[in-house]
Image (cartoon, rainbow, N blue to C red):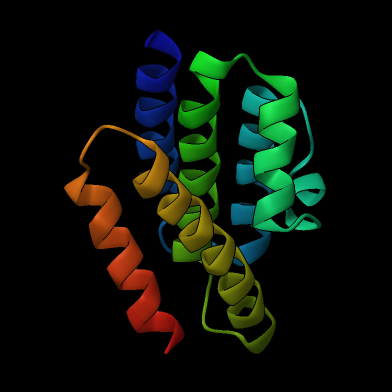
Length: 131
C-alpha cells in the first residue's frame, strides 16, 4: 500500500530530525502528521481512549484500510512518546501515548494476519517501560 510506505518513510525522516529537539517542537511536527494522515489535530486523538481511536478508524475508513490506519496511529503515538524529554509533564504524556500505542499494537497482533517482530518488540519495550 503506497500510503503506508509514504507514511513510514516520512515518519522515519521526522524522527531523525526531531531527536534532541524540545518537546514543543516535537508536538508541533507530530501534529502535522495527525492532520495530514487523519484529517484531525493531534489533540483530538490524545483526548480519546485507544478503544475510541479504533471506533473512529472503523467508522471513517473502509475495512481494507482499517488495520493499516490503526497501525499508523500506533506508530505516531509510539514515536512521539519516544522523542519526549524526561521532564515530569512529558513523562506523563509519554505514559499516556505509550499506553494507547500498546493497546493498538496488541489489537493489531490479535486482528492482523501478518506476523510483525517489530510490533512485538515495541509491545515488549512499552510493557517494560510502564512497569
